[in-house]
Image 1 (cartoon, one colour):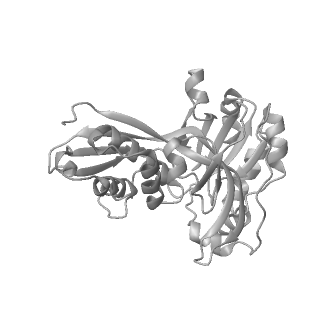
Image 2: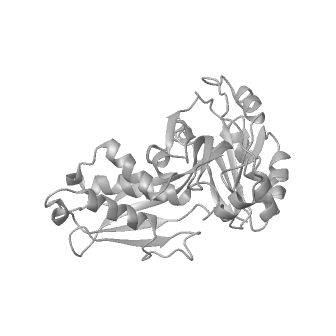
Image 3: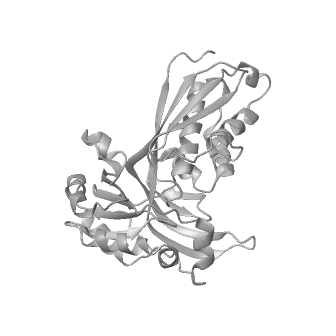
Length: 313
C-alpha cells in the first residue's frame, strides 16, 4: 500500500484535576491516583508520503516549542512508537509498509506537566495505524505498546477523561463531567519530574472518593477543592514562578479553581464556560507566559468554537 494522502491528528494536553501520591513500589516508582481530562489545546501531527526503505519513518519538528527537540534522537517517543509498531508486525508485513514522514507542530510547552510528549506518541500510534492498515494491531495490544512508551501514553491514546491509578497506567472510567471552561498557563520554566518527586514530602494520601458525576461546575469544584496535587508544593519550591501563576489564576475574573497539573510547571484554572475562560485571558497574560483558554477536548469540537491559541506574551 502506498500512502497518497496527508493524514492529520491532534495530541491534546492532559490535565490532572487532582493528583494524589498513594504509595511507592519497591522499584522506586510512585503510585498515583488522579482524574485526567484533556483540554482543547494540542500539538498537531501530520503523516506525509515519503521515499525510502519499507517502514522507514522520519520526523520533522516545527512550531513555537519545537526548538531544541531532536527529531533524530533514539529516545524520541514518536520514532520509538514507529519502531514498536514495526516490531509488532508479523511475517512479511514490515516489508509492505510504506515509508513515511511525520511532521510535529509543537504548540504545547515541553516538560510542563501536561503530557505533551506522551500525547504526541499516542497520536503517532493512531496515525501510523491509519497509514499502515496491514499492521492490524488489536486495541489490547496497542495499549500494551503504549505503556512501553510511558505510563501516561495509554490514557492519551483515547484522549478521554479517565481515572488514573498505578503508576498512571491503570485506567478506569471518569465521573460524568459538566461542560466547563479551562485556562492553561505556563511560566516558561521547565520543571524536571524526577526532581519534583525527589523533593516532595514523604507523605502519601489515599485515593479520592469521587461521585459518579457532577451536575454542574460548582459541584465539581466543591469536590475537587477538597483534593490536592501532592506535587505542587515541591514544584513550587523548585520553581517559585509556579506560585505566582497560581495566584494570578486564582484572582482572574470567574476562576472557580486554580491548581498545578502533573509535576508542573503548567497550571490550570476552571471556569463556568469556555467563553468565560477566554474572557479572563487579558487579566492573566504576562510577559514570557504561555496562555491558552477554551473548553475541554470534545466540548470545543461539538460546540464548533475554538479555544484561544496558546501563545507566549
